[in-house]
Image 1: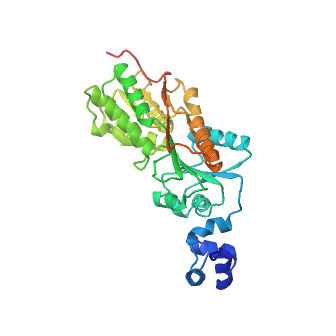
Image 2: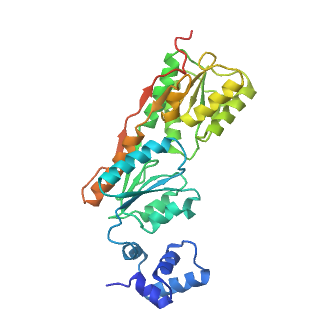
Amino acid sequence: MGATIKDVAALAGVAVSTASYALNGIGRVSSKTRNKVIEAAKQLNYQKNGIASDLKRSKTNTIALLLSDLSGPYYSSLIKGVQEVSLNNGYDLIACSSIGGDSSTAVKFIKEKRVDGAIILAHNIPDRTILDSAREGFPIVMLDRRLEHESVCYVEADHEKGGTLATNYLIESGHRQIAFVSGPASSKHNNDRYNGFVRAMNQHGLTIEPRWNLVGNFTEEGGYRAVKLMLAQGNLPEAVFFANDEMALGGITALYEAGLRVPEDISVIGFDDIVQARFLNPALTTVRQPDYEVGALAVHLIFQILKGESVAQHYTLDTELVIRGTVRTNQK
């Protein structure tokens, strides 16, 4: 049997946890101590991939959900889906923010295998970090990108189809000049929604105006600022497709402040169907994605993998148009 983390710690004269932090490149260890531990590991021919099994109890009965931001309204239904399936299976859920990227607490959970599996919706955690952490017996389910690894699955809603649905509805309602307010460039969800928008516009032979292609970063404030910029340029579009509902809420506020009425003067459509969408006046027309179902399926897959069952590596769930009151129909 090869050397264990305990052997390395003993030779280096440090605690087991300190040896683990040093070998994983995680903070709180001085460079002197880190070098001492690395030298001990070399002497003992210690294999780093043994760290996880040494440190981790055979089972923690805990799943980690790593999110870019814990505060967004979109996440509440997703978290609920993950939590209910986890609890029904006798597991706890830890939801943590990936703010800080590779140095975040969220990343420590997967690097150190402090949990039995992880669900990740955090575009600021690099692919390499995830791929380095994934291995047999430690399943990871991605919700925001597809990574090729036998221990990584991918669950998504059909965001491109949703983008096409939203744009086609605006066009069928008589709109020809349509603006698109996008989320972060690093978000696959955003890019898929934009691709759906482009596809629908191209199919109808409509021009996508660069001046109406604005960035709102998936936040209310970002949507508000994007519309302010649109207003400053003058010559408004007939409709605005916001790539998520939060940006639509901020954008509608900016339109109201400018004395414009929705949908009489300008139509608005969003994406996600967050709770606030139905309480606007008029209520927001949007695209519903099955966030609860995505979360429930993601954690269900983890349990199947932990039981040794085989699963597919890619699952796509449907999106649907929710028609409410912010799109004016039958325009001539």
